[in-house]
Image 1: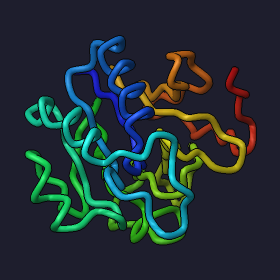
Image 2: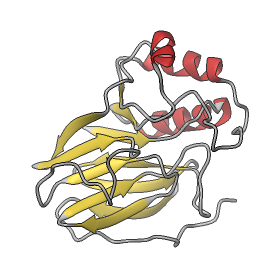
Image 3: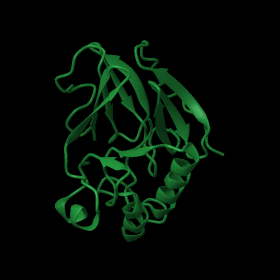
Length: 195
């Protein structure tokens, strides 16, 4: 099974459209959203083409394909307008014999790990910065943000297939790959520029 993993859309119709274009191009079976879907949040500027109602209309037809966890900007009001569950704080996924803990990242992250075993993976968004690092035997991954990337990182997502996590820009170009069972390859601050 192939997954596309994205985070922090923050109500941007433009970047949601670009994300879904890549979802189709990836031929992924499931779309995993790591929270902060509709609201831009008080700490962020408005993203390009901020239009939460358009984001709702784009994501709703994919309700049976989406697995989502709650971000710090997601609320019960958002759940009322989205036809897929968004209010779980975490979800678990298994790939190639490894446990992957999916969460937004405002509670669990590299400095506050959930109860995981060495070799497991913590996959979160929230910081808007892509990440691949190890902490206490746990690999911590972040796809970055679809709409509001920070620290010079690109608008990005992760494709997961056969135990390989591939960080990609929204044009589909790959800029980092890490495989389950390998040592984490930290690439902090080494991001490609977008054209």
